[in-house]
Length: 275
Image (tube, rainbow, N blue to C red; front, side):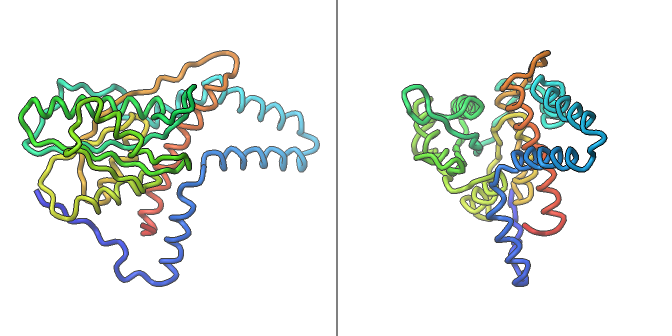
């Protein structure tokens, strides 16, 4: 099967190129945090303008933050983010082709108690799932490769791809079958850089490995570059609802909101032909 990668930069005027450069530079900003900061500033603005309704503004703001921290808003956000991928994929459901490439998408890194840089929890489930897929593919007799894609958006001492690679090797992925893409800073760049790495002529079957909440945006980005991949959901998040707000509730809400904003932003940018 042959795919043709779209040439998005052909015949683009200078002002459009400038817009593309600005968007490329701002794409990796923590835009969910910007939304929360904007809401906070809006609260202060309403508090200053609506002097006669300050109590109502304060009550509404308190209710909003309570609903976010307690999970009452995080739960529907997660439902929308994971829509269509509510269950983890099973190895038994996979049918491997003669030539298969598993694309593992980065999900961040963190320092453990010994200050060692390791994959984040969701990222590690992706690593384990990819290694399991690779071993099953080899047992089926196919030609199997793994591309691990992830740069260093957190500005740690190592890119995600370079950090995940030893874990993949330790779980049975052959070094000769492992390719690293360690420059991408977001999902769109994951797809773009993997497409460049593979070139225009492709006859492999692609399997995209990532978390449920990240899958819709990932499939859309890779499809934009002519890579129609099979999804493999490594894990599904199930946020917990409580009466009292919890730090985890705010983290869950931010993660889900980040994905929904990212998905909407992708389609807006595509519609405006900004990439």
